[in-house]
Amino acid sequence: MSVIQIRGEQLKERIQKIMLESDEPPRVPFGNKTKFFNSHKRCMVCGGERTFDTRTRMVERLYGHHVRYFPPLVAWVHSKCHKKIHDPENPIILYIQYEEGDSQRYYEQRKQRSSGKNTSEALGV
Ligand SMILES: [Zn+2]
Ligand SMILES: [Zn+2]
Image (cartoon, rainbow, N blue to C red):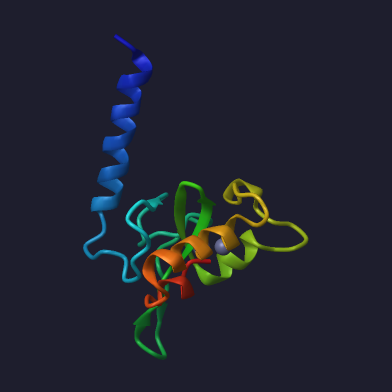
């Protein structure tokens, strides 16, 4: 009956498909409730794939940038693109949908729940 509802379902399917594109789960687990904006194989900012470092022969890992904390929404980005998001002079506000202090509140809550034993915070940026 409602068109909006159908659209929502399609969007959900599409997002699931994008998430299934990845052949491996993100190495760093975020909280169960965390949603992901995009596949961790592609950078949300420039649309590029992960870069391959010919020197170390390692694929550069994308960083999980928190677009929002309540509820948590994470976008995968290159480290250089992540810097662009947080550029103090010209931040990409499209990817910053949280209020000042949200991140602090979020990590404090997570710490309480996980009693500080997980290291995932290091990549949640
Ligand atoms: Zn990028
Ligand atoms: Zn960030």
